[in-house]
Amino acid sequence: MSLKVIISGASSGLGMALAKHYSKFGATLGLIARNKQPLEALSDELPGASFYGADIRNSQAMQSVAREFIQRYGCPDIVIANAGVSRGTLTENVEDGEVFKSILATNVNGMVNTFQPFIVAMRASGQGSLVGIASVAGYRGLPGGGAYSASKAAVITYLESLRIEMFGTGISVITVCPGFIVTPMTMNNPFRMPFILTAETAAKNIVRIIKRKKTYAVIPWQMAIFARVLKILPNFIYDRLLANMPRKPR
Image (cartoon, rainbow, N blue to C red; front, side, top):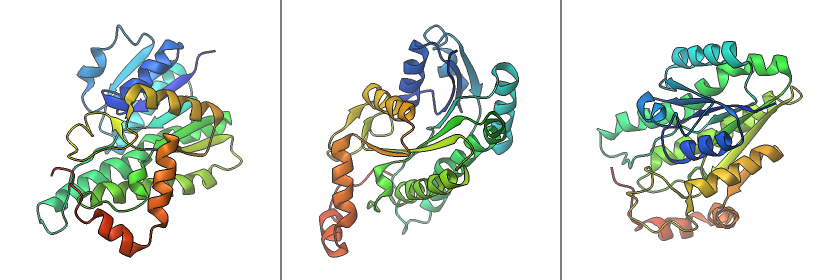
């Protein structure tokens, strides 16, 4: 029996790479993006996929997607909350307040809205995996990236809470913290990105993590070491190291 997989943010980057990977193995896909047209353009490449134009910030839209998918295919085996946004922000700029709200609404509330409509069906079936794409950016605050770092720190903690809530239900909650990936989100970064992965390589790693039902993983492994070192650095060292680094464009 083929896997049934939901992926948000599937129109580009990591989400598209995940969709293509699962499609190769005959998965039944529910692919979500705000703009449905780029998804539909891939219909020949992604047989067995259903495309949903929905904004993950809209809980009612996501509930509609879930109802339609479950009625047509049944309960999904895997739900990957991949959609996310990133922009440079500076707290001192009043206009960045709305950017903060948008990033948090998409990256945090959007993940909740992606998972919530499927949990009742997953509980009833006693199986399934909820996969949240977080980031090593959630380990420590990055200058000029306060909104993104805050959103990913919140996602890491939220997924831990959810994992405990799902304990004993048969539902796995998996937190994946990638480092840098070649996607539209990183293409304008004005700084060196160590251990950067292609979206295809990252997708293969994530699929392996999901198959093993590993509850928490950082990719690549080199970034896991790098992130842990950053995490334990005393503030007076961390502050001096990062104070003058180039910042993500606003």
